[in-house]
Structure formats: structure tokens, C-alpha cells
Image (cartoon, rainbow, N blue to C red; front, top):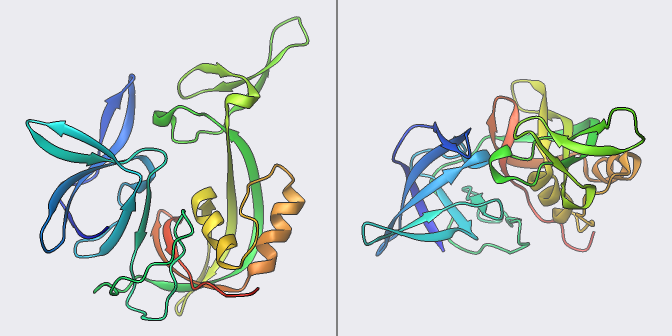
Length: 237
């Protein structure tokens, strides 16, 4: 379902399992429904007042006999642009056909790839996909994965596979390096009909990204990190 989002509170943090986690609340409404959505982690500060957005895979909770929504690690969001012919690519590979939104996102073109970094990330929600470190037990040949944020050891098969890419974004005014993470990387690859699976083979992931550039995008940028993006799907690539 598509809602027009209105900011209810500024970005802040809440303590979850003794860790400060980014948090924000939105009021979502359409013609007949009004809901409160608690936004966590990477989605914080990704939306502006009046934007039309689609949210999926949110958790429903009951608070004071009122239904509220909350994002999870599986949640996905898309912000609509004003282009009628823009075929949005969501994390679920859906085609959005709703009426375009009233707010135009910034536009630019990804023209180069500087670096790709696939890595194992902490599976704990509050750690926000923190990169795990490989450490060795003292005096014995035993290695383990360690999250310095939650101070927990993990086996390799329990970790998330995540990726960071440094790319060059060209706009009408400038060219600058930006950081793109797995959710947005998958959208870019899917828009060109490529396999969106994240692998540890850096050469393979670099080759995939080089195949799709240059590519025009609409985006939300926070501290030079792309939080949300949309791009036109190219059929029969």
C-alpha cells in the first residue's frame, strides 16, 4: 500500500540491548487510513515531508489499543518520483503502477566504481550490519568472527553477507564519491536484469557494477551514503 509520509519526530536514538539505535516516527496516511510507523536503523532520515512512499514487510504491534507499524531488518521502502514512465525497482522486484508522487527526488548518474567490499556482517538487528572482524584464539589455531559493537562471537554461517561499494555520482553541479550498500546495489543490478546475489568474489561484484554504468538514478543521500534510490528498469538486457 502507498502512503504519503509526514515526519512526526526528529531523528533520535533508543536504547536496545544496551546499544543506542537510530529511531524516528512517521505518520503515514492515505485517503482513508492513518498509521504511525516506527522507523529504525538505515531508514532514519531517509524521507521528507510530503513524499509518497511504499513500505513493505513491517511489523504490526498493538500499543494502548492502537495499531502501530515498525520496520525490521526485512522491511523495504520506495519513494516515488514525478516521472510517469519510471519503472521503480523495489527490494521485492515489484513494478509500481501507483500515481507518481508530488516531490521530485534529486537526480544523478552513477558513472564510475572505485571499490567494492563484500563482507560478513553482524546478524544482530541493533548492530546495523556492522562488519565482523576475524580474530584468533590465543595460543591455538582457532579463528572466529567478532562484532566489536555488541561484543559477540559468531560462526561464519550465522553472519549476514553484506556489501559496500564506493561509486562516482555525477549531478548537474558536481561529481562526488558516494557509498552504496547492499539493498541499493541489489536494486541497481535488478534494474538491468543481472543476478543481484552478493558474493565474496570482489572481481565478480566489480564486473557486475561496471556492466550497469552509466546509470541514471533518483536518490536520497545522507552523509554521502545512498539511503534510498529508484532507477528505470531496462527490459530485455
